[in-house]
Length: 411
Length: 79
Image (tube, rainbow over all chains, first blue to last red; front, side):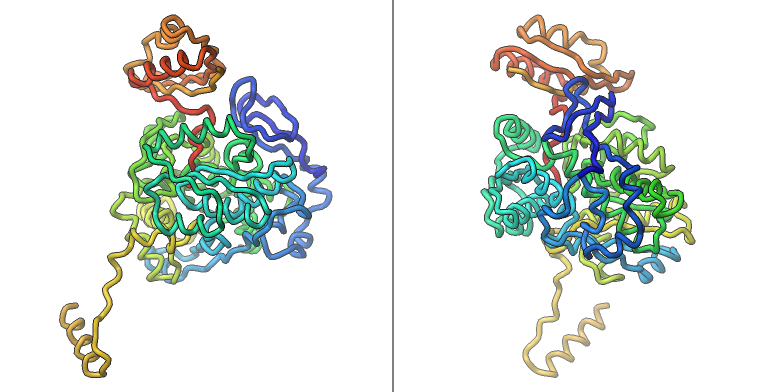
């Protein structure tokens, strides 16, 4: 790991050794991994990447762990789909869907957890843990199983069934916490202080977050070594959004793609939109909110990277876009009906955010655009149960034709 | 016990000497590390030192006033 230099505070720039730390001791600012880009530049090339595995680990030179020791359930290298039908529907010419809902545990979280689990083993931890509204829980449990680690996964008691089962199947110690969002948050924060576990998004956070960059790397490679004009990304903690921007810029800095002129757009649902609210008020301070949204995977009231997400919007001349709660399902259905991709509620937020950005003229018809779909619809089936309206028939041709006729008359 | 927390103040509480009162009335040592206070919203990241029950009671009082108290690194729950 000669390519990793240190951890550095994003606020005061103090440096720390590579250890399980996430907060600067001096100013309590967040820590970030610092790379030796000169060393990386001397080895990395398009050819070297293309010769790597068809997974996120083809970009290991830009991840803070050793590839040989990777806890790898084959995350990444997910399809970038040219979405011609949806593009036509929205009035765009060149639209792509980065379909990260087909990762092994069905969300983009496999990328970050793969890095965190690898780093946790490197540090000598035997237990992987997280507090999650769903996708992260599934991924932590799956990676712990793969790595032979113990897993403690904390979830709110009212989580969607698909996500609970999706985590429980890997046999972690699953803890359903009765209590408000704030109470769950507080409990898990205290647990992290009291147990010597690798909490993927707490003491492993600087390493964990880097895994999201692989989404940007893949998109750039899959677009033929170029960055898109627009990226539309769901907003929860803001980490994914900032790391996609970081990833594109790392590729450019290393000469793998040209200058990055991507406008970064973050989308949130009305019931939990603290980053959009700050953007709309032209503030760089995010006012925490109590989440109340059907997009539970975006229900982060006090986003850890909210400020940095706002900075990314400014740097990239992007924007933030809110989607009404009752539009979320419409977005899920629109993507499914036009492109055959079934996404969860967060994806519905992205698709309706994309639609709004086009309507507002922020995305012009001829500008190459990528919408990031980060989670699978099978996990939030409750949100779209109303689509199930089968024709009910007897096992005869006449019954079938009668039902068809009735439907034609109704429609 | 030492706790690292972030206070977020709504506009109407920004002029109140809440951190001073927390130290004086609850016997909690407050140590501010970073802050950004503007007319419409303000936040302060600080360390609190004191007996467990004093820190807990102090935080309950601060919360009851309408100040939001969070872990310094933001929410630890993720999607």
